[in-house]
Amino acid sequence: MLALRLARGSHPLVLMRRLLVAAASAGVGLLLLCALGYASGHPAHSTGAVGRLLWCFVPLAATVQFAVAVARTDPSTRPRSGLSAVGLGPVKLTVLAAVSTAVSCTLGSVVALLLFLHLRGDLSGLPFDGAAAGLLDADAPLPLAAVLVLLTLVPVSAATASVLALRARPVSTAPVSATVEDDASADALPDDLVPVPVAPPAGLPWGVALIAVGLAVEAYMSRGDGHSLLPLPGRLDATPAGVLAGWTLSAIGLVMAGPGLAHLCGRLLQSVRPGAVRLLAGRVLMDEARRLGGPLGVVCAVLSAVTAAYALYGTGPRPFGPLTELGAVLVLGCTAATLLTSALEARQDRARTAQVLQRLGAPASALRAATALRAATLLVVFAPLTWLVAQLAALPLTA
Image (tube, rainbow, N blue to C red; front, side):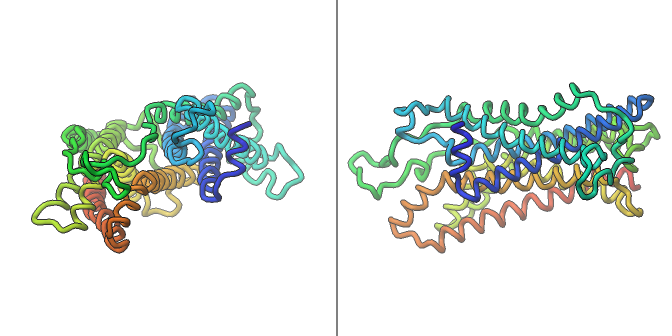
């Protein structure tokens, strides 16, 4: 009940993010139900049915990641001083965030069920009822237990991931502290402006190694003419299993290398006699490398996979089916929204620092220039990397 009251009184932008989570959950639920309908309507094609169901876990993972990012930025569940006195400590706030996430995802699952039944023709009296009866195998009965299990996957996964991500979130209960012992005024610099060394993320070498191994596996396995163990819908069913394994290794490598690359970008910004704007941009980027690097790596992995798939199969007329397009839209949309939400979380955490800098006389234009410089640096580094990995991934199959 408290979660519903907080949702009702939330800011419109917060409500919009929750509605986006519900929409993504509805899309994933629709894909899962479509896979179940195919399995019910084609009992002789069990391998293809299992493959369709397994490929649904890609948009499921992207949706769960987006739901966790939204839960982290929800202002109603962020730890603040004084809340423990009224019984809302860090543990209860974490549970509250998980419940709010589960409610949003459950709403999306219910919408997916109603839409699926409507398109199959099971719910009549509405426009477009039964419009996709053939695609959704309307003649085959749906087992109720399987429907319930599939529709609870997104809420349970998102709520569990939210608890795991938020349980160790630090509680900011102390005011901004002074950095000099004999200076306790309000204009003292916050702790995150003190030039202490920031340990670089340790995943960059492993990420680069995984990218190289993935590309090598793909180049080696693409010489065969075997078929994939997990066939994609449409024209992707002839992709060898080793190529898919190579793509997976390269994607994991990009995700692992993302924080290290972001940290390296921050160090490069501060090199060669930097000014105040470059120092501020580089230091903030180094501090936020772990927070922004992971979502950036996921976006790069998704974009490189989409670019390589389009280069391989996107030239013919209607190479992909509607369900494949829905899954691609969900993955792209959720990963982009996760990156934007993570950037919003970083901005919320830097709000006090920006206020202190402005009180000390820093112009607002300098803060905006530092933000633009960080974004431009990340774009310059990650965009060519994404294009290079996509071209190398598609090269063995197009040669």
